[in-house]
Picture (cartoon, one colour):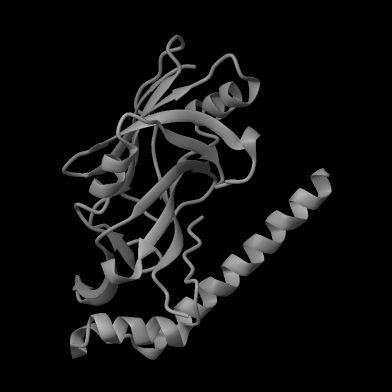
Length: 225
């Protein structure tokens, strides 16, 4: 099977700048461009252009911890904007909903300090490049599905810009590491962009993490029935 995209969840640490107890909105830089995260990946300028165009006037969902299959995990809606620094979202929390209001209070009180973007990375938009003397993965397109509030992130160069009352990366391929290497070699045949053994090991490890996450999620769903 040919791999065309891999699921990715990329998390970032933020800090509170301002708060107001009336409006229930928050603005945050949720993805900083060209900042290498703990998984040796970085989002490049232009990566979100296609996604924001596709969203159009529709809101970007704000979830808790990437729970795509849980309706109550929807906490807020947002509009996205591209700046020189990265992707900025302005979120509107539903302060009449207890869960949404609690999430906002946790964010404001800094008990939650992280955001994470969830979506997919097309394989042909991922390249091996050199950054500050090390080889990293550059993500030139990210298919944004949602933004989540999470407890732990991977990228330090983000922040909460503004809050008015009311960022766990698991990156995994949909195929084997061998298929990933074959696709990368075909798309980027130069020696500088070859996928090495350590990269394949990283992919295999992340895939195992995704399987563990999926198993845990299924167990939680079973307990809730």
